[in-house]
Length: 247
Image (spheres, rainbow, N blue to C red):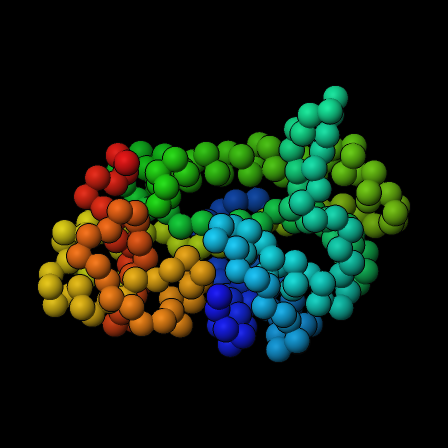
């Protein structure tokens, strides 16, 4: 598990990293992130136990940020909407902001995508190619954000009837373009690394994907079976097996 200092760097990432896409509605701005950062004490934030699902680890970081922010009250987290004994969706966070007198529905996500072919958003695939940027955006806009207006969610807002309802989207991560030589922000096949280049980079475990510069030193193996982040020379690269994305 990352040490305390690494945990603080993860919090700093959450509060400074730009949005993965800058044209989606309801995006939290850099200025809003700075405001949050100025109203919490990072050194007082605990380091959540690491979860091997990066999205859940990222969610735990935001739980602690929300709890620490002086004007916020966490009303709900990962609240499921159930109809006829079936779950039809869930929201990430519902927060009362007592300074601005609003109840905020937050949806958050951390995502890494590789540009595989020219086809709009459909050409961006995750390390697990079943994860596609086009599908993620569609789900955010057509399912997750609308879920905030479900009567079961709006009922929780009723605790503060004079507060207005708003929504915020935090979508962070990185997009990697295709390349054949090591360069920051590209992805390449494992076989494209030369012997010298291979020894200049270290593999980065998922718990360090937000802070690859802090990942412990490790030897990059000759072969890999899954898409792996590597870091060296100040460069962050995604390295794929030869068969990716046809796994």
